[in-house]
Structure formats: structure tokens, C-alpha cells
Length: 259
Figure (cartoon, rainbow, N blue to C red):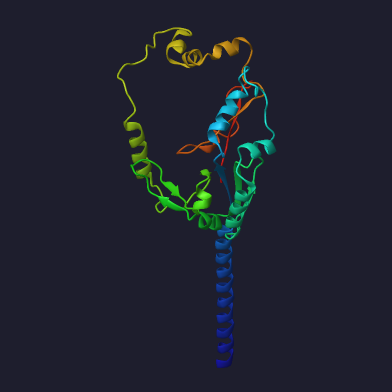
């Protein structure tokens, strides 16, 4: 009887260890998957001569200029205004140490970085910096070696983990802070206006007149075949931006995301 109990006890212990080991593996796998999530960051570089680039852009649309409609190929642009190949290589060598893949777009003015979220943050030394004022979002601070950072104009898509998650109360305070300084008036719109008069004074017609849209509408130009990009940030519903149709014959909008 004692031998049978010992066997049962041994089997129970082994079963418990197997279950515990399986649960530990599941936990490790989940953590590994979370850490291995791939993120993409875009780095905008400064032109080698900003004044010359600005003048050239204006000259391409100036009929009196010899450079009128003389557009550059990506290779020619890189030669005139883009960063050198040696600088691009230095950038790649630095990020390779952190297992971050760097790819230069044609023109040598922009880089695409791909890596796990953890490696990307380590490469940039990304840190969350609390907002200076209440109600405003925090910022991500990054650091690069001097020979690289001096030629970087902006880093897009880099986010450090926030130290504190926003609660309903803080979100409410943020909305209050953002709207507190907006001008308000006690004057109410004249709702007795009939027909398009109300729209011309307060609504869509007023907007269309202010931006001279009616001139385009009268020519039948309603944005057919054109698209616009919207970069969104803030407390909004993403579904309101994705595949949103302004009208069946006009522009379709899409959210642009930097992950």
C-alpha cells in the first residue's frame, strides 16, 4: 500500500513539473514574441546645401529660369544635394552593431530602419520625456553619435515606452487643457436663415468660398482619381480615417502610420 502511494505521489509530482514547465515555456514564448516585434523608423537627412536646394526647386517652376522643368533623377539629386555614400555607410555600420537594418532611399536624403522594437530603442537610446505642460503628449528623446546626428533632420516613428499609462481622468484633463484656451463666444448662429444662406454664412459653402473651391467645382473638378494622406496623432478613432470617402466622386483618404 505504501509503495502504491509513493508511486502515485511520484507521478503527481512529475505531472505538476511538466505542467509548470509547459506554462513557463508558453510565458517565455509570449515574451519572446513581444520582444521580437518588428518596427520601422524613417530618418530624414539634411541636404548638403539647403539654400541651393531651395533655389533649385523654385527655379524648376520659374519660366524665366534656365532650370525651368529641368527635373533631376534620384542619382543626380544625390550627387547635388544628398548626403555622401560614405556618410550613409557610416550610418549603416553604426546601426548594424544593434542588429538594425538601414536602407537608403534613392537621393540619399532618407533612410529606412528595420529592427525589433527593443533593438531599435537601444540603438537610439530612446527615452520617454514627460510633457512640459499638462495635457500635452510626452516626447521621445534619442541620442546618436555626433558625426551622425549633425546631419539628421528628423526621426519619424521612434517611440519610447511611456512610464505611465494615461487614465480616463488624465485623458479628461488633457481634453480640458487643450480646449481651455480656445476662443469662445456667446453669439448663436442665426437659424432662421433659409436655403443655402445658412451654409454660406456658417457651413460648408463658407469654407468652399474661402478656399475658392467653387471655381474647381464649376469646372467639374471634384478630386476624381486623386488621393491625400493623413498623418494622425491623438485621441481619435483610427477607423474614422481609414478608407473614409468624402463623397463617391471625390477624394479617398487613408491614414499613414509609422510603426
